[in-house]
Length: 100
Image 1 (cartoon, rainbow, N blue to C red):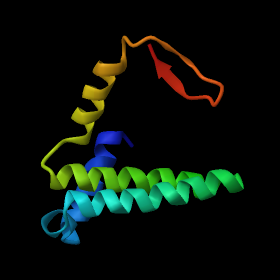
Image 2 (image 1 turned 90 degrees about the vertical axis):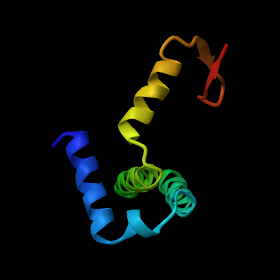
Image 3 (image 1 turned 120 degrees about the vertical axis):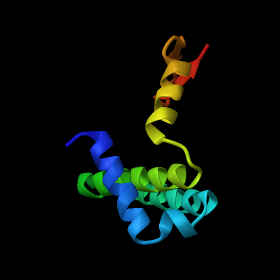
């Protein structure tokens, strides 16, 4: 299944449950933070199944937040790629990319 098909199913799921109509982007950002915290726990415990679950849940909350804001997450993703595609930089000692 393609990303766009799954994204549409997530949006439909959110609409069916009243999330998109009644929640806020801020509430979804808070939910994203909760899921990111779960990801940190999963990474620290080296639990791949929990990591996969957390990454998926993070994507769901991002899709919900974007839909509530009347944004298309794929478009946001493409805009971010266009911004970074020509960046130069290097990996630091902690494994983080640092742009020039």
